[in-house]
Amino acid sequence: MSFLPKYAGFQNHAEGKYLQYIPDGHLRGNLQYSSDQALTPFTKFEIVPDKDGKYWHIKCCYNDKYLASSDDHNRFVTPFVSKPSENESSRPCTMFNIISGPTTGTYYLFDVSLQTYARRCTSSRIHPNVLTTRYRRDENRHDDKLVLLVDFENIIRLPKYLSFKNNDKFLAAHTYYDSPYLKFKADDIGNPLVSHEIFNVGDGTVRIKNESTNKFWRRDPNWILADSNDQTAHDKNTLFWPVKIAKDKVALRNVANGRFVTRYTGDGKVDFLNASSETITKQAELEIYEPVISRELCNFKYRTMDAKIYDEQVLTMATEEAVNTSSKETTMAISLRYLEESSKTWESSLTVGVGIEASIKAGIPLLLESEIKVSYNFEGSYKWGETISETKEVTSTYTVIVPPKTRMKVTLLATKAKCDIPFSYTQRDLLRNGRRVEIECDDGLYTGVYTFKFDYQNKSLPL
Image (cartoon, rainbow, N blue to C red; front, side, top):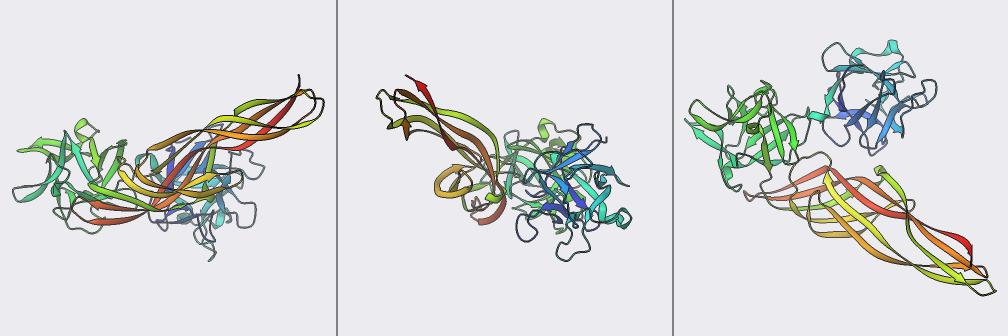
């Protein structure tokens, strides 16, 4: 079995589009080669080896389900199976052989049960470019079944506006012999020289523009200058791979020479940015800060249909007894007191960065017996990614019929569980340069801890 990353994305070789889960519309639930971006909440898949180490299961990270071919004439490959199924003779079977292609990083997805390739659909106007195994092996065009595998373990999304810091100094534009270099020299994040704008390229790389020079970073020959006017992503000297080190720390690897940018002293330049480090040294670790004065988060839209409930456990919340010493059956009311714990967290499932105190207005999803309902609003100050926990004492009154000369033991059971709900939202920032910017985001993830499914159980006992 060849080495494959734990998390990956798939790019169609013919069209260059990335495979993504479709959350809405008539193609909802299908996988389609239609995304221009490698890194979205819908393009991430987990690659899981089978028990024998021969084949693979592919799990869609968005809905936490395994891929398998449908049992109809369409044979769409969709994420609908809750657990891996390794019986080749029964449907659905979730095993795929991921076969190396003709060039490095290219692969074929082969359905083990059906003995045919998974490829994009090219014969249906209603289902264009969806993943399917409907074609015979001899019908499979080479480019339609060949995919480029994107290693998600090495891809992160950076915030739109950033300042970088190393050795307790911010990276700032610095003129040296009439050329705009980058140097670690500033103390104040409000300095207009230290703000940079991030532009995501579809494959996961980024271009970075210094806001004071209004030019993109460029390697020349290894020094990084903020002097490029190139509006395309064709010059590899202007492209960088972000690598996550910690929640608030990244490294940047230049695509052209494959080396990390680092704080470097040489050729008369002190603490300048230079793409020369083969490894992530301390000088190559960049602390990231968002040059934001204030932030507002609003317009939360929860995709409750795609919620994931997990870590369920049944708890005994309270136990009380109703005692009937009389010779007649009687109805008695008892009070059961218990502690109910809950928590809520809003965060990004993709973007790294330090949590910023924000003004937030959002509905709160409630996990009920058979549905998720967004009810009351949370409004106030909130640090992105922070968990708000609450414990409250609850008294429940329960009425029970007790036979004569009997003790009735009443036990209140409940289920405690976690629930992840993806959501989109609007982010409104006031930047330190005075600009107000509004960004529509689709990478929100709400995590709640709930207590639900309350169940009273009665047990008769003799006096």
